[in-house]
Length: 473
View 1 (cartoon, rainbow, N blue to C red):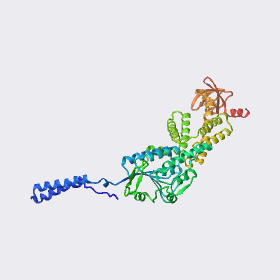
View 2: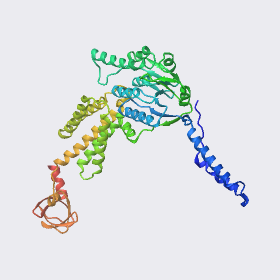
View 3: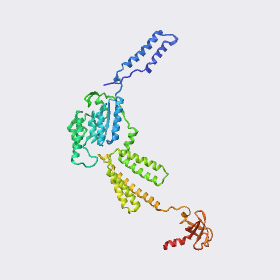
View 4: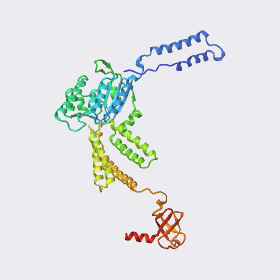
């Protein structure tokens, strides 16, 4: 086992000649000759140089980079793996340790990740852990592609049967996809020295294995309780890379460097959640509509545009069903018709139904974890439908109302007689004094209503007379 060796540095040796000079001049009298002092100094410096040059390469502590993948397999995950492999190669790491916990994911992303693992210059260790974790579906393929496959007690792996992202396939296409996936599995499982038949059983019949069953069936190399135990067990083990070369692992006492997600990966990982993307899409659409109805507010429009663009970017990373997109467009059309023609709620109900089914089927999810939650789809579709219809009706009503400016806007306003109208006189309307004429004499201080105007002469009626006319009308 390699041990860390403490090498003397210049900073630690430099005080030695100074101390020697102190003792040489102690008491103001030389304790030895100048030649002895210089000889001591040169000897110490020479020893430092020799120690530095002779220090063996194995004196440095080995490094193992670690990447935690505890999400579905999708393009963001594939990007994280590519970055981690490049980082491990640049660090000169003994291996890249991938702690895996996934229900599965997209077939294309899985293939990209397998290709990266098989072509890696650094040995890859896939460790299904901690206890309670799983390597389901695409995760099983990733585990088997690694140079070292390991599991923690209480974990499981398998159920790797291919599921179509776009609904039920015909028998011929289904057979093609399954055979292609099984061939991919065989292409590297045998080269890794593992049980091909047991691996194919997980892909063809969705068989799943516990950690102990996977070890007994030679699907994994060992079971370990944690990272430290895993690396200690692998120390000194010789592995055969995919190209046939041999490599000895030196992992005992290795320093584990955790590779954190970048800001970009964190944002994309958040957006690739279909529930988050859907909420941002709906919220952004409502904010943009608010901006159109109240121009000049700027903030709702800018924020809504940003939310919609981020949602579209996130959804673009996921498999989308275009029939679901048509349902969403049809829902918007039904909402507009409800607000315009007044369908007594029937059109709005049909729009909410289209919206809900469109949201539920929007993502062609191979695993349930990548699908839109039914509760979120129902809540968002109902809320969006009600709010949209309400706002559209307000907009339609405002457009139907005639715009009145100046003296036209005073028709219908209340007024007060400032003097006796016989029948002409002055009235007070909204704090302004106007000339007015009534159809009959009116006492001073009487409550009036403006019913029209002739140029700048208002026509008024007593409030009681107006109410009476409305009642008979």
